[in-house]
Amino acid sequence: MAYEWIIDALDQTWTSIDRTLRPQSVEVYDLATPCPGWRVRDVLSHLVGFELMMRGEPVPPHGGAWPNYVKNPIGEINEAFVQHYRSTSGVEMLDLFRETAHQSLDALRLLSDAEWEKVGWSPEGERPYHRFQETRVLDSWIHLQDIRDALLEPADDHGPGEEIVVNRVEAALPFVLGKKVRAPDGVLVQINLSGRLARTILLSVKDERASAVERITSVPNLELTTPIALFWRRAAGRISAQALLNASATNVRGDQELASSFAEALTFIP
Image (cartoon, rainbow, N blue to C red):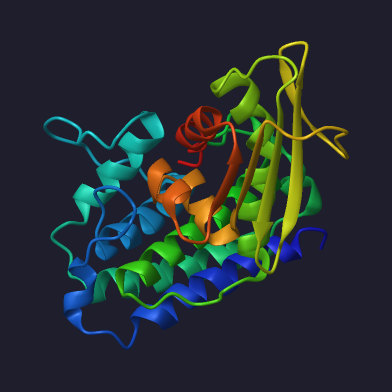
């Protein structure tokens, strides 16, 4: 099967969530995570709810005003499921998560290549189903790190989840610099990311468009050096722009105002 790697990535990530929480005390489910407004139990509720919605289950009704961290219709769907399960114990949510994950994996293994390639709805708009499920890996892997951060048990969990996250972040950087920051023509930015997936990303603005380039022939206006773990956390809104820029492991050279604008605009992963 052409997309077996996506199933394996989901299986690995969801299994890691279960294994991380299974031996924990009941108190950990109420710990705050870096995901704005959500506790550990809420992360599980979101993951369960989204899988159920994809199977055709109705989104629970929501009463009252949306919290201020809900920014869009997808956020409203997520929050509706989170509030729906607020009275369910953390251990019960973990059991439901395990059951739901197994059912989803079984269903994915039955899909044909044509079904994986079919274009349909996704949170990113109309996309092939394999792209949608790749985004499920991204979302689930980031929430695994949310849980680990809440438990103060960070781990070097690399694998396909991290690769998808870092590759998606890299691919979005021209959009961040060109469309969100609106950097002027001639601006050059060099980003040095350290870690297992270390890379240097070069960006150039020309004709009001930013693009990735293979090389630059002059000193960049901005050179930002930082660990991958900090960079994707900023892209996912888990840390502030200043936390990224002021971290001891981050080095900023060149235009400080551009650095601030770029870090502020960097958050784009929901």
